[in-house]
Amino acid sequence: MKQYLLSLYQPDGEAPPPEVLEPIMRKLDALNEEIRASGSWVFGAALHPPTTATVLRVQDGELLMTDGPYTEGKEHLGGFTVVQSPDLDAALAWGRRLAEITGLPIEVRPFF
Image (cartoon, rainbow, N blue to C red; front, side):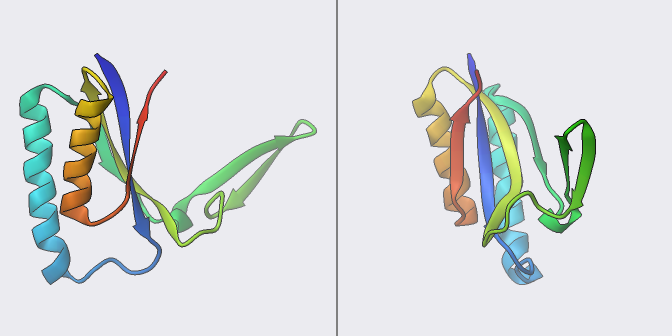
């Protein structure tokens, strides 16, 4: 089976208040359990805000380190899930469920 990356993009700024976020997190936990039970789960994780990132570049043999995100934008990668699916349609079905629960854009991409 192929593996697919389900990338969750969230808006910059403060997280939603607990009364909004907690029901979403419960639904996400249930979806993750469903993905595991189906045998499709490979790995998943949430990420710290982009302000915690460090970008590394090598230029003329010198290492340049920059604090903060690689690109400035209104959205950032907030987390991801890797699933194994028989085809793109099956991976898109998991991505759709993730989008329905979070209300956020989900990018589905196959691994080489």
